[in-house]
Image (cartoon, rainbow, N blue to C red; front, side, top):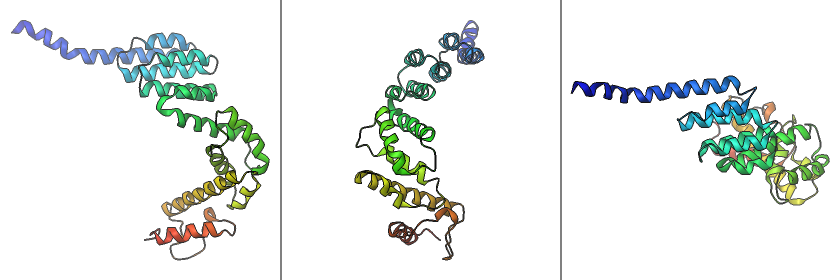
Length: 240
């Protein structure tokens, strides 16, 4: 019986020892990930915990993506299939700025595409640009980013990007777009933006439940559609 005790104790200590070894390998990898991501990834490979391994490889892939996105994608492929690999591929797409790599992001593929699209618009279409002036540029960028011509999402993001920056919400700006479907998408996105602003006003105590003037965040041009939103939200119990 007594001779079994050391064996039992070593079995109990094994998980703790393994965790300590993983932590040490992770720390060592992070020390070199910025200057030598490939060496860092080699150190990551000794980690046994799947979650820590995925985090470690992802850090190395992020550091490599800016100069060698293909190599970074190969690092992500070494992560066991699942959330960790998908997240790694998402980060490679983001850090490389290559939307095509979002196709490797598994369950995050659409989140990845939309994240990069939002970033692309922010850098390519300055706020204050008229929707009509932005349209040709957006058509080209959307095609380059892999969106089909009938996908409404690029126009939803554009609407929020441009109209969301204006002090007064004016859905008539949507009429500057050349296609009727884009105009409808724009107006719908602006209405959803108005809903979001109502929610913010409610949550921050700015909404005039006593019938007073609307706060600045809810300023808009004369628009029966937006007035209908206000009426609907009040009827749904917006105010206590």
